[in-house]
Length: 498
Ligand code: BES
Ligand code: ZN
Ligand code: ZN
Image 1 (cartoon, rainbow, N blue to C red):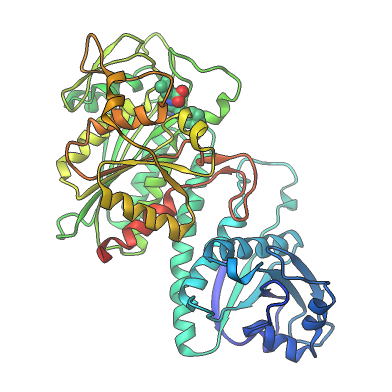
Image 2 (image 1 turned 60 degrees about the horizontal axis):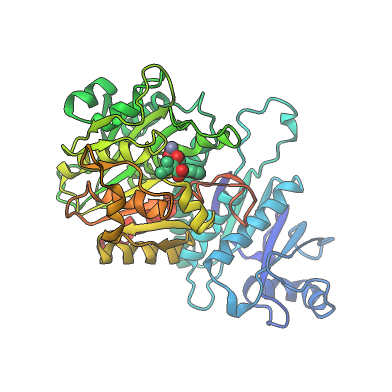
């Protein structure tokens, strides 16, 4: 989809289709909607007065203008009650309007952005573009039948009137596009099946990103990871025929910027290993690399946005499979930190590979470590699929994440890391066990990770719930969601603002 910014106003612009938004009746029409209404001899006001278009949230109605306007068609879209409006609803409305246009088979539309209330053109444009691109995302790569029925919007024109407006629209559009493309790329990786998205393919993707954006990259083979002491990562990787990769991407090295380490769980398929999972629903476990997908794509977006930070992206990538070479319950592993771990369940593999990644990140002396992981089924039970479980050891980092969450609409909810729960992780034969009791599973997973970050400010995002969803949301189609990408990018964008 091409998105262009042009000088013009809604009531005067000739196009296939014009999108107009309004709050719910009886709010007065304003901005471009009002100008179009005047030009159209009060057509929209009379629709609203008679209740044929109410402006309810996400209500959509298409009209032919029959020559009354330069635009051939107009799509009215409701924003709901004015007092309840926010950027999250705006992203949803942009998506719903875009879906309507796409499904009607129309290839092009125009839309004029004008600031209102506290919302300036730049953020309106950014959120509009984000909502539009995310809401019209489709994963069709692997379908071969009826490809001619796949519908896509070709071109979108954002209209502004003054030079100031046009500059703001250009900036907002560019930012929105970069971020949305990162999320869509993460979704492609999550939706991709595990016979296609392997540790090797993730490493290739990382290599491509490094090349395109001048980043440093290191990829350790499992034998190399084992040789430097990553006994936990190596143990998980050795059960699979598919070679594991420990990927390190680094941008803005030695430039004096603050260092942030981003760590993503990259299990490209989680069968559970020897502690094998029930087969029902096991296909979903291709999404166990959602954290890795988010880290890869946010590294790319941070680079395109020129965020002034030294970023280190660390992705331990491997399958978790049973085999004659697989690690087993009862095994004791030596982690990179030097601590030993007794394996109780080979299905608690995420925390094992992450423990080595967390320890590895310490060598960069980061100002903050953020990990994203589809870590526990318990987090899905506790919080469902709308919310990221948020854990950490540093109040100010957690507050920053909560702020980004409010801005982006990617919901987070804090869970505690109380010491009392650590009891469950004590082992008779090693320093820790990798599994506690059944109760408080998400918390115990977090506590396990906390043992590997020393005193560095750290946040753990358990994305097991929202990483992929079964029902469409206003601007998140079902399937892989790319959750966490927008949240963390917002945090990075705001980092210098304290
Ligand atoms: N990848 C799973 C967690 C998961 C479950 C993600 C459901 C998404 C949906 C993880 O590796 C796992 O299997 N965790 C175990 C831990 C347990 C053995 C302590 C779990 O949650 O059951
Ligand atoms: Zn598992
Ligand atoms: Zn897993």
